[in-house]
Amino acid sequence: MQPPVVRVEQLRHEQIRLLARNVPAMAMGSTLLGAGAVTLLHLVGQSLVQALVWFALNTSITLVRLALSQGFLRRENPALSIDRWAMLFLLSSGLAGAWWGALAWWFLHPQETVNLAVIAIVLMGSVSGATQSQGPYFASHLAYTLPCTLPFTVRCFASADPIAITLGGLGVVYLVMAVLFSLRIDRTVVEALRLRLENEALVAEVSRARDASEAASRAKTRFLATASHDLRQPIHAMGLFVPALKAMAGGGQILPATLMAVADRMKLALQTMSQLLGRLLDVSRLDAGVVEVRLRNQPLAPMLLAALDEITSATHAKGLDVRVRESGLQVHTDPAVLHAILSNLLANAVRYTKEGAILVAARRRGGHVLLQVWDTGIGIAPDDQVRLSEEFFQGRNALETGNSARGFGLGLAIAQRSAQLLGSELRWRSQLGRGSVFELLLPLAIPQGAAHAPLSVTPASPQPSPTKESLLVLVVDQEEDILASTAFLLKAWGHQAVQGRSLQEVAAVVAEHGTAIRAGLIDYHLCATETGLQVAQLLRQEIHPDLPIAIVTGDTTPDVMAAVRGAGLILLHKPVHAQTIQSFVNSLQEQVV
Image (tube, rainbow, N blue to C red):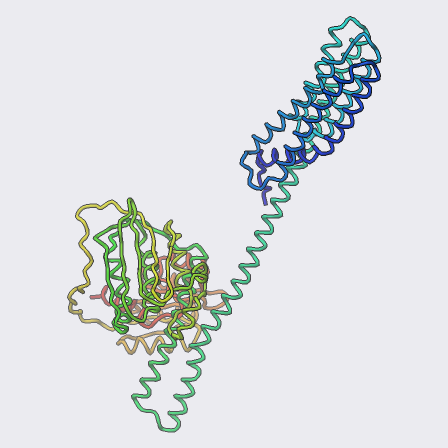
């Protein structure tokens, strides 16, 4: 960990703080030394009135310096910068030093040895005290000592008395030594302050890192606990459906209608589990930073139509009115990432809106487009709104609805982080019982060619499907249940499946069927030394270099995803929907036709 950089302003601030803390002791010493000077001056025959006037003004300057130091130490929101405070301290030090130096102008008589000695002792004592009290800030010490000692040395050198001239020379030597000593104190203090500030910054950084780590650990624990709970729910339901079917079959009570009802319920439980795993995969991909953003100019209309198609059946079932206002705008964005955001926002809007309407609006705002999703749903409590983008967080109002389809609390977390990938920020406003609005600001694209037509919800006329032929698909997995279920599915769709569990078995299957194999569905992790990538390489070497192959895996680590995509293979994450496998096979048939 690199030590943090300490700014000059921080060091200056600490130097002034030390200087200010020394002022009370300095004030006491200055007052005592001033009283002693008045006494000595009176004893050597100087005017007591003049000495008392000097002492009174010196005391006034000391009080000003004391007030200045207390003002600096007690300030909460300083109106002055540290440079201004430093200048005030310098001016006060210079004024105090000049007033002590005035002793040489008013009371020094170089030809009187006792008078000369008294003034020299008083001034050198003042400089000694200043070296200790003002040493932490060299500029302040210099501002004090120069006007304090120079008048004395000038008066001494200007006289013809040898003793005075000698004392003047010694005064210069003393001044140089005091300045050098103060400079050394200043450097030592600055280095100590720098080390202290660096240590404090490091401690603060370590504390922040520790707090972040502890927060991440707590979030991970909460994340896993919630995910485990939500996964157990459909598994629990499946665990009850299976013995119920067995019991009904054993008692001869099972009817086609009952079987279909149970099958639908089991399908719904599987869909719930699959949706949660899909959301967890989205979060994992965002955490791993493997989501590639490809920005381009894109009309909003087709993206909104695609997202709205996903909620059509749900809105019809609830009788919700769906409205769109997009004005043929185009944005500069990644269509896939924006689709993920819209899908999550619209799914939440439908889920938490019992009646009323959902509005999707796109309005131009200068060089940007403000994309909004409005709903007339249950709304979000103000206290819950600050946590909406946390994983698995659901507002109290959502939990109190008792809606079994209330979701997993991942949609907005995914939408927010996806928005950040686009360089934007998801924002929201909501009122309980009145609904919510979620909005995203996207850069406006410069239209190229004709403007895009306004959104149309009229579906295109279906085209007649060409005749499909039966295909031979190689399925590779170590699990017997997966091999059997995939084979049953392919057979139900009019295709044939050949199977393999290892690289050796696949080689034997390839030797037997050769180019009759038209595609491969291959698990990634086969055994400790074999992966689906090795099987795919074998198939493309022996059958065709462009043989369609889908790698099926539950591994969501970035290295695995990158390796599969780098090999030019299709990646399917478990659990894989039957419709996904069917789409993969149908794409092969279209290539054949």
